[in-house]
Image (cartoon, rainbow, N blue to C red; front, side):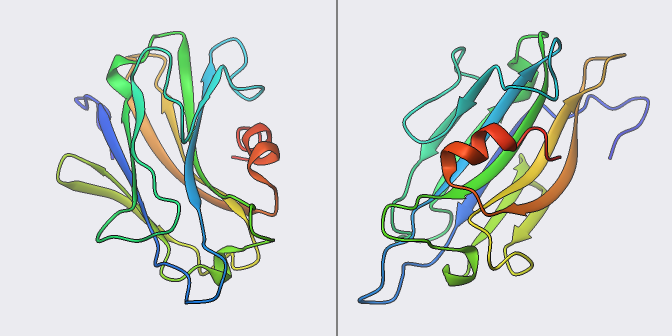
Length: 177
């Protein structure tokens, strides 16, 4: 994915999609979550989180679409990570998905056709579905790290499921990769 001439990743789009719940069943509200870590504590507590209703303090990570039901065509939630604009104090970004638990304990196995696509421009970088973690309620999908030598960003797909509510997941996601 990189070479000595690589400029690294600059602007990555994460798209999350799923189908609406069948009639009479609780709606599924999946959310993209990003945790950003600074150089002083790259495996510890995140410097900040980006999720529905929030964005990064400097505007480099934004959630452009937020769906509570999965209705619509294509990707229901889209988050843009402008890695090349992140302050050099940040060295690690972890991307995950959590299911809001407002209508009972819902899992990925109960969510129809859920998938995530990571891309830069028109190039797909990674694709995930949740078939391997049907009993989980949240998952880490990828880790982006800044190369210390030339300050470029690299992707490490890192698929791991959790059975944690969104708040607990936000605290655990960085240590789990």
